[in-house]
Length: 380
Image 1 (cartoon, rainbow, N blue to C red):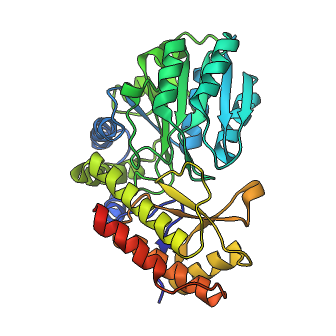
Image 2: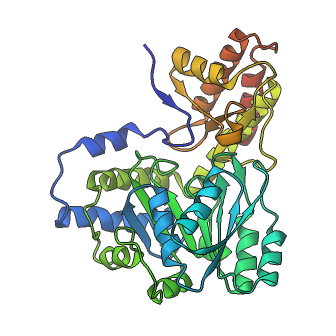
């Protein structure tokens, strides 16, 4: 018998209480029953995302919310700078091009984070730039940028800052109001601990002013103005994934009961334990500025990533992730978000050790677990 153990950076493990909540009988969505769940979620999401701004709930993935924000925040005459440090950073530039937005796509080496000064230089040299979009935690490379420092720069320049926080919101410290982040995007299946199917967008008043005054093309389904107006009524403009919202309500309760500071500490501790374990067994950390929500490992010479992932899944039910595009087959990724705790992390490291040992990698069996345990004992 094997349990399914999700250590992918999305979808992430979902608590049993959330799954049970979603399995209960449900009512029609245009009812007070549904609006009550919406109202509760909207209030709790503000606390989880550390913002006073309204949080839009959109049926779709985080990409759906991002697409709506990109279109809405870039009226005719806009110029958007995208910082592309991985697969998902690239996506935002591709969406902008798809809709004919004037976009400057700045690519950097995967596994590195943008130097905030580079953005400052762009804004100084090109005053036509109105919007900057980047990925806070680049899932494909497990790399974190300094969003707080970047927010100070864009605010001082009077530019909108759109942040993909899909693998940071609810897992890592994030304070958009204090940092000057105008748009926060996230999705359901990461740290928010529910299955895929919901996207979220929180906009500052400055961003809303741009969206409301946008006289150009707007998305129909992913129209932020429609979503906002209906959200004020604790409703949605189109058919909602109302069972997902019911589950979200339960998951948010669990996060808030733990406390966001404690969630951030737990995730950071698991990431530190995993990194220490990896280094101890010859799996070095890929990123030069690692994110805590997901860790990317370089695998030992002669050991193939697909073989590791196959061994983890077939022997232990552990589902992991590999690299994307030119990193395919070169890195192994393990997530620390969602319904995972410290002992889950130790289990994953122990399984990784056994798989590597079976594949012929030479190291001291147990050294990774010992390194992880030491971090956990000292930090928790």
